[in-house]
Length: 154
Image (cartoon, rainbow, N blue to C red; front, side):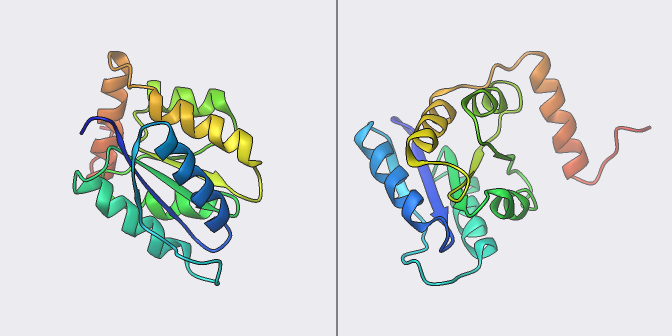
């Protein structure tokens, strides 16, 4: 996939920001998939977190961007899906290092926490930063082991 494909999803609280980020990323040359919601009518964020993450894990997108009121609900739901490493970020530094060191594949943002300009900056650094690997790959593998039901405490 070149350019990177980003799947976006939101609940009602994140609907407006999701649309703004979708348009921004498309204007920057990214391929985007909009997994909903399609209105500001009340809906349940876990449904849209799962929908976007299933698209991501199927290989149809490189990264996911999930938006709700705080970003926390989307993060909690997304992180229940094996293979998803979702990070709720409110600053550029965290967004950069969650890609560099944690190989996060889903970014969660809070529409009631961030302004559109900062959200664009955070999304931009997240999608443009690559995983550093090295010692960090060993740690991500440890996360995968825990996720698969194993333990690091032996």
